[in-house]
Image (cartoon, rainbow over all chains, first blue to last red; front, side, top):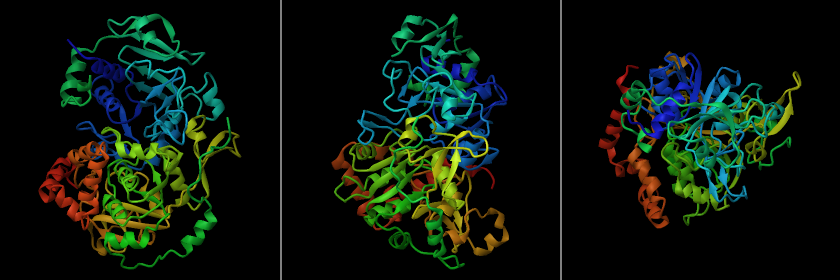
Length: 256
Length: 333
């Protein structure tokens, strides 16, 4: 079956979510991935939205992390602090984030481009809940297109913590032990992090992609897992569910 | 790592000074029903620290923000926790020949409208350097309001550590006196004035919320002055018959305004969905300053009140369509 890069990324992200776990998601790709996971590999996955939506039965994709759909037929509609404190207590397994820039340690920038903080060249929204979720959830996943302007050696602003300066840095800063970046899913590959150095590491290449291509699209040296795995393409069932139930209007999968 | 952020403080975290102000806050069970114009004129002052309830474009008191612009309030400081259309509106009071509505902002999330994209004019405003800002996260602002609601000067949390977000915040790293663990200390945020939109309130200010409460239960308690706008006034007896459902009590509230569709063009859970076409129009028209000025005149400055704005946006037929879109209505209460 023919599929596009966005469909592949959403399928990879969905497969990374284990059944019976909890995930804090935002709008767009993360939400599509969580919805697909619930309908395929992880029917017992519990979805949370940071504005207070708990375990909704999402009828369609929300446009806001706080809109009516985020608690549609949910088990609870609560406060933002309640959701974040569920993370802080250690009960949130996964979160999904994005950003304008990511570095080798999975740190993210969603605040600004430029060198003068007080007068940014480009101002982005800022942390929102991203810093909190990446600090407090066990595993952070990032889904993003792979290009060197995004995968940079140095961030203009470190909005959201990855492994900070490397092994041990999160714990030294006071962040909860055992938390941190887990996967980066791009249009070229699935990446993880090296156990010792905590630097980004290629785990699996998407169909038709060469390692060289991934390195060229990255602004820093990547670690490589050996042997490298090959990403399974989306199954007909995954594609059917994604296209017919999760995103029938092609809001997300049509972006490709 | 430095143990304190270098960001400017835009509000006073002192619990003692807050107590002195709360000591003078009226707490009697009195009728507070008034118009939005009167509430804004009496309760929002130039230079105030302002906070707005809701999240994203959801359950926002848009009706109050319009009135703040119309009355030309100046030099406000603002709490931007996933502030979207409200922030976009406040920025419309800057750089458009009407002085400076916004002087400073505590940022967790600004200039964006989530999945809808970034506001060109809010970006221009933030990139101009004329608004002072300090960086936080959504949870950090929620904790700061919680500290204020508790009557404390600060609360600890475990996020922001190790990042530039911390470095440009007004937070400090402290050591837990019991475990020695590092924590971030977040200063209490006591807004001078806040506005919260709810589905139902009585004329004394007892409020019910349906759907997510975001940070509003703490925000109501943290604020020195509070304007409540509601979709519907309900009889006081209804509150008395089911007090469990009251989440904001009358003694926190200074004004109650019945403002149906007061969250338009945002989403009001169980009432109406957001008007995505109108929100797209905002994002489009902001690209050109002259077109934006005409747009603001037409929709905000040259109208008498919010109901005239609703009329311009399609009136009752459009609002009924948005009620249909709010599929939650199809389920029982």
